[in-house]
Image 1: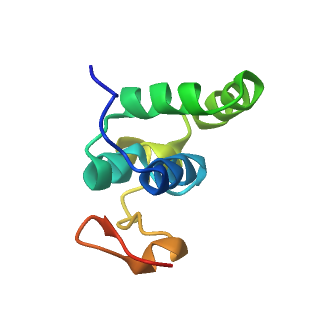
Image 2: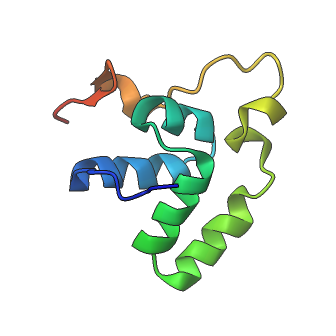
Image 3: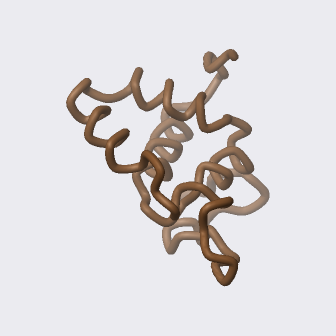
Length: 94
């Protein structure tokens, strides 16, 4: 598993932001940035303070909204209000 992909600072910030969002599943991050849940966890661990990382892990572990397979069937989208400016997997200017 190689998480040393060439992400810009802006892309890393967006990955972290999406990981913190309650209603954005890991599958959405993988779709947009081609990183698995395990890679997101490693990125979060590397980029955050240890205490913040532990708090985030406790928060998302087993959370239904962070895992598409655990979501209710009537939840079809994963687009947050902040994703309006994103098109074709590219981050537009905000």
